[in-house]
Length: 149
Picture 1 (tube, one colour):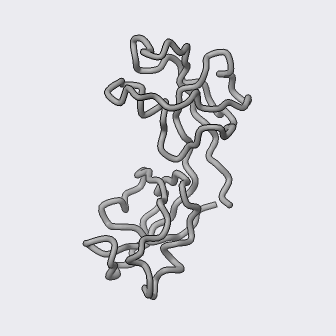
Picture 2: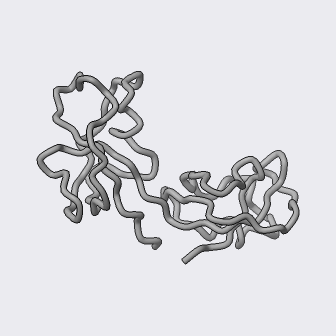
């Protein structure tokens, strides 16, 4: 079920994904705090609808905020190939220092935490890298969206 929240207009487009980072010190005293801070910190969301609500002033977003509908988003990630089965649970393999690797965004995906198990929605296939510098045997999967807390 979609949640209505306020975000910056540059993000307010259907399909845009973002990770909610929580409250900024600039939010203090804002009359719209309740509408902006109604998401789960650290969780990945996808914009599913944009409301025709106009723009409200905001101390955090330089162009203000606008109303959108969001839902928890699935997360693409690399997991150990021996645990890459649709319907099973898997964890991320751990941090990777090779930030220029084409798979880095999937080894350390935004909105996912190490040591947390995630249910695999779909096995996507081979990761985008040719070889893993950490000698990990990885498969690209899509995790189910997390439950909101």
